Length: 581
Image (cartoon, rainbow, N blue to C red; front, side):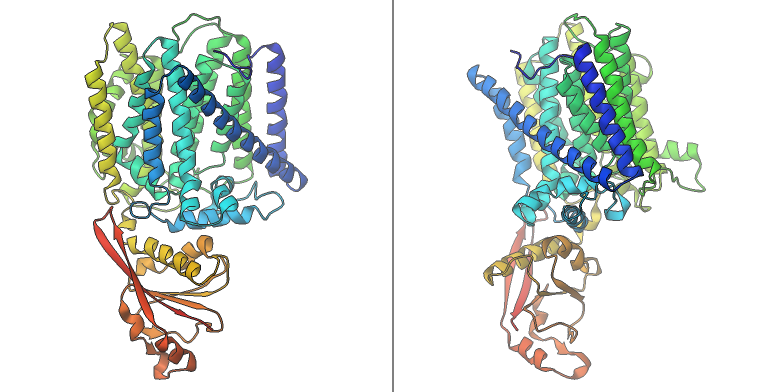
């Protein structure tokens, strides 16, 4: 059933699209090149366009739920909802998920952007990355306040939106191809079986953003192939333009999206079907020119950031390293999981797909995807980036290939099954879903596989939780001014200021080791002391001379809180003292 918002692309709507693309492209270039008024206008056009797309997404989801309920088709939507609820379970759940100091700094930058006239639209933030992505991630905290849930939601909800758009895009594709729509659950659940997806999802930081945007792009592009209209083309434009201003690895997805838009444009203009659709509908040259306009619009957004001087080192490569040697080693490590589990249980299937596609056994599109995957693997290792991390950590740059490979392998299998008249039996389908589900549960329980740094700073997330509870107990807000002192002998946990920049922006923070009371602490304000052991009972005065504040500190009662870390099967105890002025 068609809806009123299913606007077809004809000569009239094409002109509207071209005018729209020309306007926002020119505005973007002026925002970066001139700034001032143009930057402010571009920022609010972009922001309110994003609000429109969020509203349309919610409307579309509600519309499809209504259709399923009316048709009494509860199974497909119900099972997918179960998958979404599984991911939602980890938002705000510190027993499993992390409180990342990097994401705290990123969202702090995003919140500060709201105070700027142009929302920091053309600026950079954390480590020189484009600031726009952090503004989006900070929206939950801007509305509901800074807390663990809004920190996680800022990055997690975009991933869930991307997964939902992929679900609807694949579902429409299957319906068009005359294949059971229930099969759409397989690639969606298969994502659970990739340990990097579950690990970095629970890390709730910018590293998951490229995956979320790639999921969005795949789902929207599939819908473009099934039912091209100005709504879908405009949505692809928004997502593609956002890719230009997000964490660097997503630029590879942006490049692939541009190539596929141009391929689809040529397919429509020259009336030659390069993507499989069952029903032989007349290819439209208007759709082709709309795709060209969309691609040009997206490219203009990237050019605007490039000309103005990107700070994320996209043109810097490792010196004194052989290109061929680096290509061979990076691809070998990727395919064999030499440094860390990346492909995992899908290693054999993915290698088979790469071999078949590159030897011409599959479609030309599959060969293009395979070359892109190998290119991503090579450049993620060969590019310098912000710093020279260990190999296991660098692999997170490759996460964008996971949704692309899963989707393409799924579609390739469906083509083969359909061509030979095969059918996936119900028991096999159910077994696969259950297997992927329990593989996901297993992965969610695993200690950090790639981001191993977080193995050693697990106590900090409980400290943040304890500090937040302490403020509430004392009738304070997280935005109040107070002194916050952390005693820890773990050098990796001395970055309380990074966490506080988001959770306690007005706190005066101190990080101490040893067992000495620091006389620099401003005791004229309420002071919160936290330690990983009971040393708060026996702190010695600085220089051996106890001041009045030191005496007050000793007389302040101490209590503690013990937390259970379900992911690491361990317990964490923090001790505290609250010294009032």
